[in-house]
Image (tube, rainbow, N blue to C red; front, side):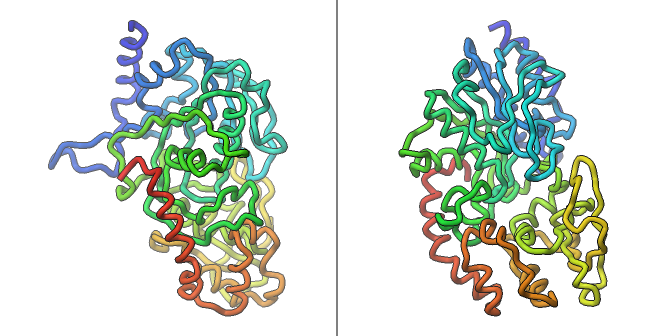
Length: 398
């Protein structure tokens, strides 16, 4: 009881300014304060009392809405939670590793807690990493997109915990693309780490909702169920715009890039640069062979902490500047179709990775055959309607 009272005072000091920047004007009406799962430390303390705790987190697991908010790991240690192990995803615990870069195990120098990397060859926690734990807290900022790999990491954590009889508690956070449900539904033959489940490109769910779907739809091997609990947010709905305080990965540096990501990530399955090696990734796209087709150009360079060896490094790339484009409310195909139509060597435009991102072989064929964006979108409708019906069962927020 004393520990809870001490923490209540601490959390008041740490998060006195934890107000969402997009909430109502306090001069006209009562302000609703967004409280993510991690902000509800009184609840977390009750759930972890007397338990050996692991956390699956990265740099986005902070309390409050500021970019310099206190990290969950530091807070748990400060209030006396028995924190035994940290698990980290793609991009590492500090969020500064390149996409696809292998990150090894280490020790967090600040807390002294061992870190087990769950990216590279070891994406699923091994039994020995869970055997001495009672519960694992999962807290990361997702962006609501199928090929953003944090949901795949969540799947593997739930799978391992189901096998070992360990509980997972999701500390829920907003989905900055919460209203968007769009794109082709993944077909099973294209399953990979960038698409594990039969869902559309943009799924419109929080990680807490998504975890319930993984359990409820029997997506864990053998239909196993993970013991699961969600600490839900207070004062959030998916119609309310949300500004992400900490960039969720090195190459999603701002809200506009995050909102463009469901549409522009398809360029990663082509020979074009999507702006890795610039300060505008997922907001620009180009290639040297498009010279003369576009006036805008950029040159990818090595940027430590963002992209160490970007595609087309050092080459002048001509193409699309989408930094001022309105935020799309759907998966927008016109950028991809336009670039394909202007590319001089169309046989070289797509690479095999495109099918993994699309989750289907049809999208490439449809673009090559000359279908318009509207015609392609019509073919998505049956799959999207079926997904929306399934999704309803797992929603926790309006």
